[in-house]
Image (cartoon, rainbow, N blue to C red):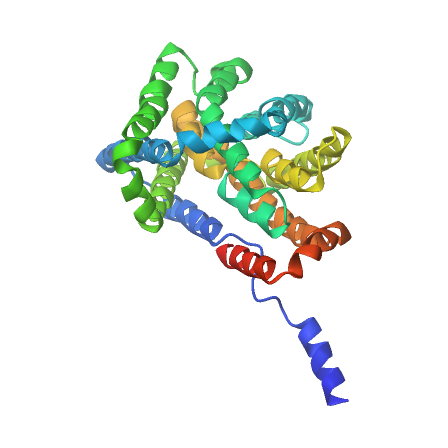
Length: 356
């Protein structure tokens, strides 16, 4: 009797880990800090200059981390990568353009521009790999697909923004293109060129440089939202508009998750590849999108990045649930059962589990 009661208590116990990214808490805290203590006057110029340097350094690190050899090896699975790129830079933008009909019923024009920008940014790398691994998918394909998306996005996202956002992207012009090249592309190329000399250092200090990455993004967020507070942009957003934005983003995410899963099946991809396509093709990178928005939108970046921040947390929570369910699929159990019998396979599975 006591054993039965204890089992019931264990089933009702609150989960130890919620699918909420702790970094989102820091981002929200940074937004709150910008609302209470926005940078003004001379301090604003200092913060803006530091933010510009942080963005350049961030993309330098991206270039230094990306292995050219791994990228070239990944080209062997070109159908999968083309599929992910098409989802990221074709299907997503088409959904963003279609959402134009929701202005001004559900979205204001600034919120719509942020939503459209969200559909243009590249896919995320780290969480796509993590969820693909949990769901027992093709992890190497997820690594290459995310890397390709980030690489292509450095060039393609600004070009798509110029074509679809036009003057809405902070007055997109030839000067904006020069700024993007100098602040994003040049540091990235420099990181690639210097990778043979600093690649081992970057690999050894991965955790420390990861903190630098995230700190740089927090600085970008603080700068953008400080400018928004000083200019009074936040008076344009009401709770009803935020609710409408969340509803639209939920629909966009649901469409992309269904399309990447069932579309990949219709194209003949196996289960492991479909998992990689779903997680890499339905997600958007906060790390890449925030610095790009700061460059593209300038003083209006605070509203532009709001849809991306909300979508990022939504995709993490939803994909965490999906990945857990995928790991318990009967098909996944059948694939892993034969490999569990030999002792060598048991060792390999244990090592893979620890690596997650």
